[in-house]
Image (cartoon, rainbow, N blue to C red; front, side, top):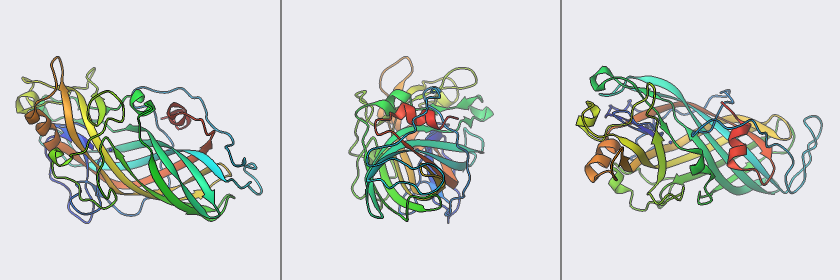
Length: 341
């Protein structure tokens, strides 16, 4: 997931640059480990990481979604765990990120939170299934005095993730067993708001105009995934031009995103129903493919370009993932509530 601040110089390799959508400070994560990706990821995730998380569009309740699933239930956290032929897991990924100073934003650090629900089928030591993204929260960025100060916070409403049109993505992996101490390894590529050939290896387009096949995963009739910048208190809407950055031009109250993340994880089971470990992001990219002017209409091509050209670049320094078995019918809202911030 990237954000928007005005253009900032990417950190030097060997890291892979992760960009967010901050134009003059818009925020959304994006990264790639090679090719033309504009995100930066340092290899080797660290263990640890918090278990927090929340609804991007508002805090969820604390409803827990734990329990057995089809294909057999777990045998408790002590002793031998029962085998399963299928199971469903909720996941929470935490990315520690930094970003450099830009024309409109100050340098900073924070965390990106991702939630998902995966339905697995088991064949011996082989895992296969589908992942449904269930939420993303990006850290706020501070604006410089040059553009009037304040903060930018891009939020993706809960309803976007709960939409029946949200896609699911193939996930493949292996496991060494079911008991605590056994290891499960898997990888996946998720494309939100667009499609592209060879999602794992394709170079990331330099401009939003290179994203030619957009989709509408939240079903709101706009391209990509609709995000809503926070515009109250200390938070300001992202400008759509240099004049907007100076406070005398238009600003966007909706930003339409496309996001790619390609991930591999190696988790250790801590009980029959839980696992945790490092997650490595080979790609975590995005572009702004459209926007809506506050009090006006859809953004012009030049306004979209301004926001997209000025997105912030995140450097991912480490990532962790925590999972928990949930009922097969668990909703994305229950997944987010299971790992609250």
